[in-house]
Image (tube, rainbow over all chains, first blue to last red; front, side, top):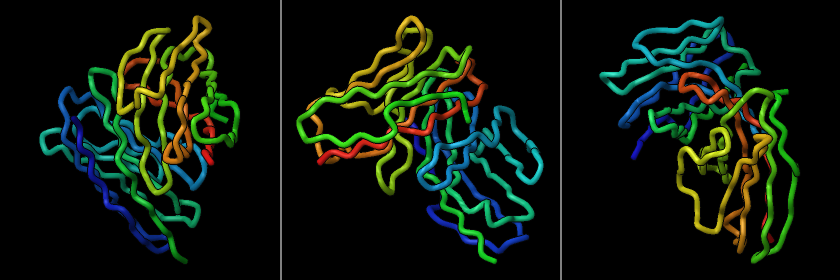
Length: 109
Length: 113
């Protein structure tokens, strides 16, 4: 089976930087995705990592360490609209995608 | 707009009933995924189809079944509904290659009363 752990909630201040961690245990690892989900809406894709290292995309960056089973999503210059749930998802060779329970981020003025 | 269409958007039905949720994937996408999201819970993977064939199965109840048709649209059938089946059901589609992102539909909100 797969286990994915993320913090349940985080709070940060507008303009600041926040790091959301995700740890996982899986067999047949075939990549890790980060999605953003606003309440009552569909998740939207943020990033994909399959090799170790940092992938930067504007204000958002994602890091992966396969040997440690660890990833993080880094959000810079936080804006109020970044208040949402952030979902870590692990894909396997078998085609399965397993999502973590998500981290609810609240950005305060 | 992700390009993935789910119908209906909302559904209210009684316990014991059966419903069918429909999903049209993005043009060109061969894979369809179904997820269940209950209140205060994360996305639970139910099942994946690729080009008409079942590819991966998650924690899908025996009362639930799905299929993908030749035109690649998919249906999720939920039967003998229970109150606990009330949830948001998402469909997502992707090209099917391992490193491609999934695009989610807006979901069907099912309420069982």
